[in-house]
Structures are given as C-alpha cells and as structure tokens.
Image: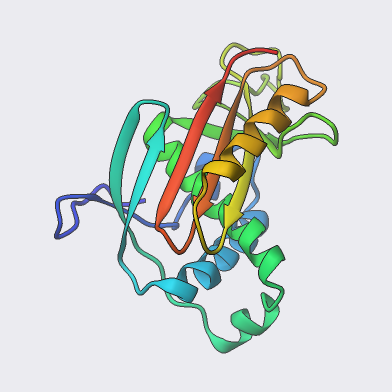
Length: 191
C-alpha cells in the first residue's frame, strides 16, 4: 500500500504487496481475495475511490486504488454473494492493517466466531512461524460485505457472531459497504 496522498488529501490505499506483510496469507490466497475486491469495487466505482474507514472512534479517509477487473475475472466472480464475501476479506485486511496495524496470522477454525486471527506485526507467530494464538494482542477478525445498502445491521450481526463464538479471544467485527464506500470496524472485548 502506498503512503502517498491522493488529490483530496486522503492516503492512497492499494492492494499490492499485502500478502508479504501477513504471515497467515499466501500470495495465492491474497490474489484470490484481491481479485474479488476489484470485481466488487468495479460494480459501483472507478479508481481511485474515496472510502471512509472507521474503527471504534478512529476514522480515516482513503483513496482506494485498484486495477479494474477484466472480463475473465468478472465471469469467474459472477456469483455476487461469493464475490462480495471474498472481496470484503481483501478490502478489510488492507484497511485494518493500515488503520489499526494488525496482520493476519491464520485463518480461524470453524465455530470460533471469526474468519481470521490477527495480531500486531511481529506478534502472533512462534519461532517456527506457526500461529501462536496465546500471544499478546491476538484477536479474532470477523468480516462481511454488503454490496448495496447500509452496513449497520450487518455490523451488529457480526459483533454478535464474535460474542457467541467458541473462543475467549477479543475480536474485531468488520463490514465493507461496497456501494457506500465505507468500511466499519468495531472492537469486541474478551468473551
């Protein structure tokens, strides 16, 4: 992600190089979510698009830059539900890293209440590079996307899912509103 400023004074956020900063992502997994994000962004916007990104009481504006999807990518992501879910992973991982600093350390297991485990950069992995979910700062990260419409009800649903998950770890609920150009994130304390 570039740290240059966009024409409207917001930071420019791109998707390049993200996997290399996240020990729980491979290039292939990142490319999958990145491609879905481009397809979803193309539905409503042309690059760069200003996005409001908020986490708890912090709010930033980013000019999100991407390369528009080609015809083959649009056909591959023709299932809009799958594209929205996977595209939301791409957008929220990039935004969360930029706004709050966590990086993905692992995909979460079933019934954890989350999609991913995140931790501050340099934490959450042991000396062998394996996930260390007992490390200080590890949190669950539950993500969803909304193609059209408001994100508030979905954010409430994702917070509830974290609270009901079979994990004691604190979490972050995140929802991307693609049409409305918003990413809303909220911290959840230990359960």
